[in-house]
Amino acid sequence: MRTIDTSKLHNANTLLDNKYGKKGTPEREAFEKEAIAYYYGEILKEKRKELKLTQESLAEKVGLKRSYIAKIEKGETDLQISSLVRLANALGLKFSLS
View 1 (cartoon, helix red, strand yellow):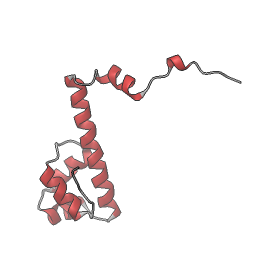
View 2: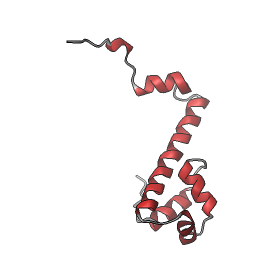
View 3: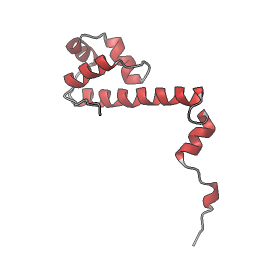
View 4: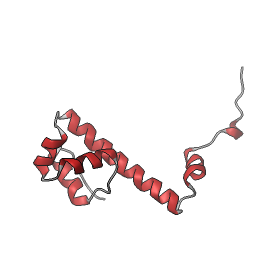
């Protein structure tokens, strides 16, 4: 039976600390902001595709530009709450704050 040296294993926070800095540092804050933008972009993109909508048709439905939808889906823009709510409604997603 093979044994594993667990002292060499890292958890996700340790890996993130090493790559992006400790929580609260500007580098870590920037990474987390990008990660959140990417996460929400992926959710919206997958739902749009599930509904067989193009970026253009979704943009027309909610009164936004297709290029803005593309940036959201790539995680390249800071998504405004008003846009998130409109997109969620158009895609049949529930959005709530608690």
